Image (cartoon, rainbow, N blue to C red; front, side, top):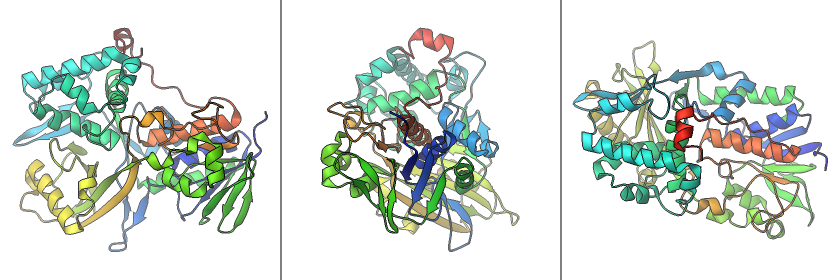
Length: 468
């Protein structure tokens, strides 16, 4: 069957933009339909009405293993806006922060020296971490799949991890990557973070941070899609996906019908559920569990201090409610912008801004001596109540793939395609997962694979089993 000539992509987040750009580059007339007047979805910025300053909804980072996201940035011409960091700093008051940095040793031993030197964990705790890492390394993807129905906390208990080690080491990594704590997150998904993000390749854990507001990363997408022959229509709301009983025929919008040979849904699961008629749901097995796709919130807090309090580019706060601090720069008046991030923030959702600020400042003053006794000039908290899907045990069984394949699980309407980080990307809820979903959907439309290959495991890591 030949590829559709005209495709409607519902949603202008990262997944929809990645899909539309790849389709347009392949000669398909791809049109993005986005309700809002800006692109980027949840990974974007806003103008603070209090100050007029452009602020990110939340700090997003990428890693060296995010091969598809890096490919997308290269296609947009914004890869130069990413600042790379090889070191990760961990607060350990009253001592100076611990530093994890790679050495010249091959993966998976590249962090051995700096990890051994960390003072926040005892020798016994480090040995416990090493045992769990070794087990994950040896089990590979085949072994981790057997843990899909259990939490990562179950795995840590089986590996006899001390509670302090869980709180200070495992939890900060897992909650940052999966947006759920260890007792909630699927063990398989958390294991993947360590296997592919830390153990397989020495370049994988490099951390990239945007030097510009997130919205500026995705602003070029509109022109890139149009230059490739596609279209972006902002401020137009999808009302329903049109379905004639056999195939989708386009999208019903608040401005009328938009006819298309195929439709790609690149919106969250709850939004997609509102676009689907009961007839369409009955015809497509991928749509029958949309109500079971849970979400998890994130809180971002922007603080301005009258002077510099954070002299590092970033800082992990182990064992605290606030997991990360990022230095967002110093203004001409000498004030420093610090961005605090709270992932897995369900317990914070009912707090007002003063209460959030009080908790975050308590964490900052615990970690940064220079902040003690210093009041911020301004505080702006941002709640993302449905920031990511919840990668809980058992989710992979209901996670739909981009295209209908004719099986009982995924069979369905052949010209309806799905994208979004919650679809079956093989990744947790990340920007890399969103781009992968867009590339997977575009590939399904075209009938060929468009994913960029993952970083290959290092020779030693591969021999030890990380890729099996």
